[in-house]
Image 1 (cartoon, rainbow, N blue to C red):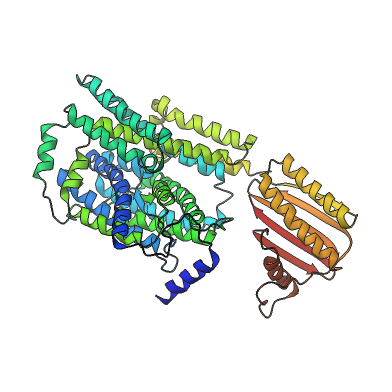
Image 2: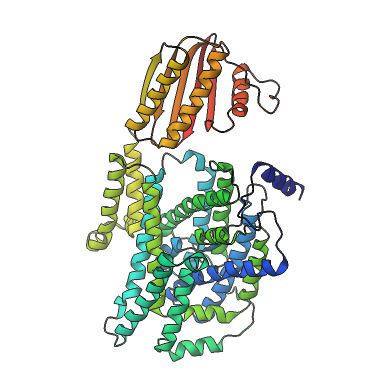
Length: 583
């Protein structure tokens, strides 16, 4: 408890509360407001539970299993919400980031359910969570392997695979001879039209809840046109109103065939969680400048733990939801206390077996429209991540070649059926092919990626500063580095150069070198002289050598612009200062 309190005090001291927040992260809303805010989140969480029922259906399990799986899924989301909202060592980001049963895991779980059964789905989902936790552990070392072009393409491939599954249900291609195919298409198009219309032209909560509203409209239309069978109605009516979920169906079986697709799902979930936690940091701190990487790592670790818990409790993989973060931004309520309200609602609903039965009875056109909507959103989200950096010839070929190879799985399935059985883990889906090909291409293209150039500046004073600025800006333009990152480097180097000159620490010329590898911008300053001591707001720790004292002082001096990392060294009178900027 004392650690949690000290953590909150540190967060309050570091963060600046945004003026548009009504209930900030450490506030306690009134009980009625707390209940309503919690229910609002639950209303968005529940439609995602349809993924659980579809997976159970694919495995041929009875309705009782589906109902219990949905209830256990609610309990898993409740536990994960609390774990994420409260820090406990490395677990928890400390932000209100409820997860949902994620579309990321739907395709591999569906394939596993059809071919191997639910025990394999549950075990491999838990393994996917463990893989995401490992990804969180090595996160700082993975930036070169998973740059934005690779990360974005993975998210894009997940959206494409999910969208294709949705199109199949949307168009009713599994039963083209059905006399009600026209009605099927009409309901599917109407459901999708509502979702898209509110997403494009709606505002406020209507826009954020567009998927839920479209789902409700689709169900109403399905009832109106008799798309619920008498068997489905009887199934819902025979379920109890109140009851504890059964765990008798839970069993686990590992299958090496599904390691790759589920591991890819864990990776994609981790990448999305990075964005969600970063967004939560921005919403809760108006002075935010760059991500708190340690906090991001804790958030990804907890997201993986949530997925593992979901697998053990018999549900599909869980992942942080960007939609719920959007609701918090609109309502101005990010209080971690809301996590308790969300958990309470979910526990209460988990005791209602009819909820699971109702989700199981959702008509195919409604489900297809929802999957198509989510797949399209995820696909474009991946494109946005890719486009966040300027396109180079490397990124062009990574995306282009990987995309075409992934499509070949659908266009030429007979080719892949002729491959040896051991290749199935890498080629049984467009997602597997996309991820394997883009990661391998990126590793190949890392060869020769780092660009380096240097200059020696003999002049002094304002002329020296101007020449360094021209040098940095010219390289930044030639190498297509983000303008704001270049300007941050320019400002930091200007400050350091000014300190060196005014303090008499610089004798003679200054050599400046710049390095860039599409991820990190490194500026190296070499000169003859001495390293200055720059007093910071805090006293320098005792026992530091000259280079360390300089680094401590500089981090306190450059309050608004500073490098992400600073390395300094001194050998006799030869000094070197390295500034690292993550771009």
